[in-house]
Structures are given as structure tokens and as C-alpha cells.
Length: 449
Image (cartoon, rainbow, N blue to C red; front, side):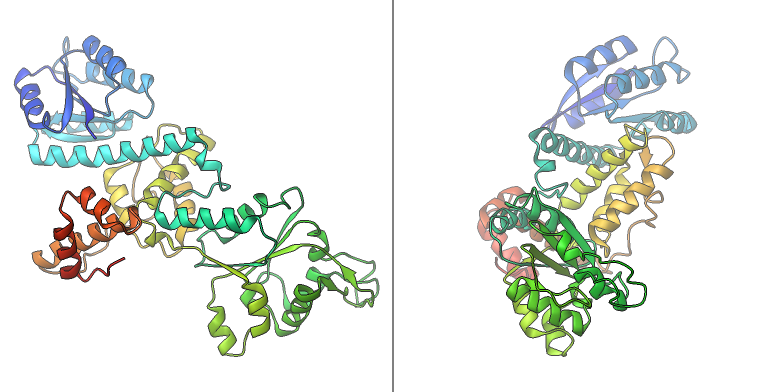
């Protein structure tokens, strides 16, 4: 995709140098003063603007350039403007960044460094545009804020559409923070029970001596302190969906009683004798290996098979390719609006850190870090420090050959993930032939889809 670039500089030689260096890959527009610059920006809506602060009629001070910056941001709060200034003007460039510029580069610019900076900035632009396109298409709300363009998440969404129409119990597996409750809620809202209640309960958050009463309710006088009859959560979920999170932590006694309810749709309150029949769908979730728990005698095998009629596995964030950038952009937009800080953007370094971080806490960790960063950010730039990430982790190689192979392997695997394992599409994205792609897979030890 060719992007539009606007170069604003009163030095004809620098304008020409940058134009010829960049014209092969981008559509270039030039301006040498404020009037022409703002008119061109409004007409062409460039993806990126390269701005010199020293413009006529005051080429020796930053006032005119800062006015251009303010005019551009007034026209488009999300515009990406890179300041191209001399080393002696670094303080002015930093002032411009505080006013909303995206980054700065020394003048005269090194062309390779300039191209690398442009690539990073345009990647941010593409992520933001993709987010806006999804938002306009209504796709962001399709699964109650479950966002993902990766093949893995598209498969999850397809699974939810199919299973929501049934009444079978569903077991959702996945690491902590992958969105298991959101998936359960999506199943409920797309089911025939959507007008009934969705009742979530974290089995690990309620003391064991209270869990039976919380789930099944109790009769008056059933135990000390039971001064009146009380319905349990299963009863409140009648005609709806009961979501049992952390199901792997259920104590043995409750496992037995839950199994009976799943088999017969009836139960007794604590201290009661009356059989109560309730029609509710049970969706359970856990981050534990339930098969291992069964083998270890910690979880009933018959209950496992009752719960696992249909199993949905949510992928960890580290396996979702470009979804991490898309989610980060979504959270940034959302929390920026809530905190009255529209126009916030990640720095290129921050995006690299986000993409390299392993995200052990998955989507929940990313969401929490971005929410904090929006609050802590000074100006319009969100840094790795705002996210409480310490920068890029040490690279796991010591030679150039190892580094090259590591990068090649990552690119090949990402291309395969983005295209659902289709070799032809992945090879086309990387600009190589199918035979070359196969050779790379074999050399790098990438398994065939």
C-alpha cells in the first residue's frame, strides 16, 4: 500500500533530497510555508507529515513550525507529524513533541534512519486505520468487545456462533486473562436464552464452607445464621446461563452435587428435602489441566465428561500474531476517551516493546497496562515506561546468523498464522516464491500446517 507523505521545509535542497529518496515507495507532497502546508494537508490528508520548525517568515525560530503543527492537529487529532530539525534545535523539537508531534529526527536526516522511522510510524497508522474500519463495520461489538483478526480468534468466533444455538454444556479452557468470561457471555447473548439472566460465579473466590449454600441456596434454619430461606445462584440463573469460573477448584462434595444437577436438572437446597427443577445452561471455565486433575484424583471423571460436551480453547495472546497491536490500539482509544485524553499514540519504541513482550497475563494484562499508561502519560505520547515495561528484552542469540534466522523464523510463522496456514498467501506477503518459502520452513524447523 502506498501512503501519502507531506514534506514541509523551506530548504529546497532538503525537500528535493527527501522526495527522491522516498518517492519510489510513497506519494510525496511538498510545502515550504504555513499556508501551503495546511492547505495541502487538508486536501491530501497524508498518512505522515515531516515538518521543519524553522519556516518563513521566521526561519530562525520555531514559532511558525509550531503553528503549522497546531493547525495540523486541529484538522486531525490523530495526525502523525515527525519533526525534522537540526541538532541545535533539539529543545524546540522536544517542545513540539510535548505539543503533539509524534517523533523527531536530526537534520540533515540520514536516509536509512528516515526510512526506518517512516516504516514504524506508518505501521501505527495502519493499525489505527484497521481499528477504525472495524469500528465502522460494527465488528468490534460482535462479540461483546472480543476483538481479534487472527485466524485463531476468527475460529473462536465461528465456534461461538455454532455452539450458542445449542443447549449443551460448554467447557472453556485457556490461560488466565484470555477472556473466558467474555466468551461465556458471548455464548449466552447469542443463544435463545439471551433474554434470561447471565449469572457468573468464581468457584475459587468463595470459601468452601459457603460455596454449597451460594450455589444451591438454603432453607431457614439449615445452619447457624440461616434465619430465612435463600435461593442459590443456580436458581437465579433459571431460563438463562450459569457461568462457573475456576471449575477446577470445586471441592469433592460440591462436585457430586453439581454432577447430579447436570444429570437430572434437579437439586435440593441445603437443609431442604424438596426437589427443585431448574432449566439453566451451564458454561464452565478453568485455566487448569482438568484431564490431569482427573488422573490425579482431584476432579471427578464423570463430572468432567458432563461439563466437556463441547470444549472451547482460547489461545494465549502471544500466539495471536498482530492481534496484540490491534488490541493495544483499541484499549488506548477507549481509555483515552474515558480520561479526556484523545489523540494519544504509542511511540515506535513502545510498539516494538508491546510486540516483543510475552504477555503472561494475556489480554487482561495488556488492558490493565494500557489503562494505567493512559493515566500516567505526559503529553500525547505513550511510552514503554508508562506501560511499566522496561524496554526490549535481551535477544536470545549472540551471532548475526542466529539473529537473521530468528527474524526469518518469526516472519514465516507470523505470515502462516495471519493466513491460516495457507502457503501461497504467506509466501506472497513475504515477497518470495512457494518453493523458497518451503525451503525456509525446512531450514528453520517450521512445521508444515
